[in-house]
Image (cartoon, rainbow, N blue to C red; front, side, top):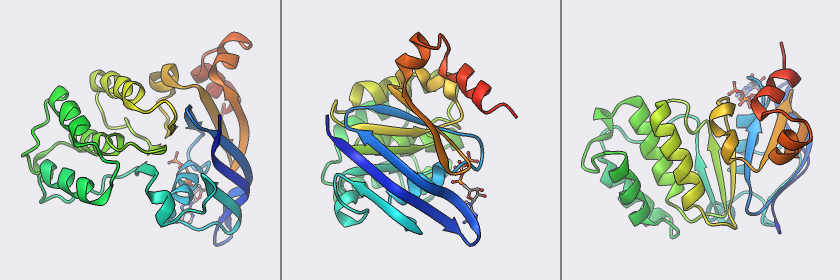
Length: 232
Ligand SMILES: Nc1ncnc2c1ncn2[C@@H]1O[C@H](COP(=O)(O)OP(=O)(O)OP(=O)(O)O)[C@@H](O)[C@H]1O
């Protein structure tokens, strides 16, 4: 198994606030990994650094051996915590944009998922509910054949019935050598698809472990362990 992401001494400061404190982290290819932590623990900051939207204050971050930039954008598919879709465009316009922009975009995947979720590709984004916009954006992001997917709160606004379909889609559609990093507070919803979890608090990695170890060795669900470790 190869390493897709490496962080060494990764630090991010916003003024005096240290959002990430000398993080050392390795992510292997072919894993679905939950990035879990309380509010303000540094999850979005880490995901933005991976996507080159922020630069490290100190330390290094490498994706398949490269610093975030044009080369890594070709292999990283990113779902931000907020939707960025242009209100006046139709869903099919955004699909065209993805097709032009990303050589790994597979339009047939988007079509299948839109159909399954009964989303009309000719609908304008502004006519869609918040949850449906989130579904559209996730569908687009998951329709790329990327090596690393970074999903920041992918199912937060989606109803529970569609969550199951979306999570199934995530596990069934992605290439087995790809890695998916999912930041979420909906741990019990996602834990069945996770291979591994990272617990983060106050900008530091508190634990990185296989989900099977939590279940088998500790006899707990990830959700139960999270509540124990981060009890207020
Ligand atoms: N632009 C910014 N300027 C100053 N501080 C910031 C900025 N963005 C984030 N922070 C701070 O950095 C820390 C980490 O924030 P981050 O958004 O990465 O946390 P998070 O784990 O994603 O939180 P949540 O679960 O609430 O989304 C927090 O203390 C936050 O207040």
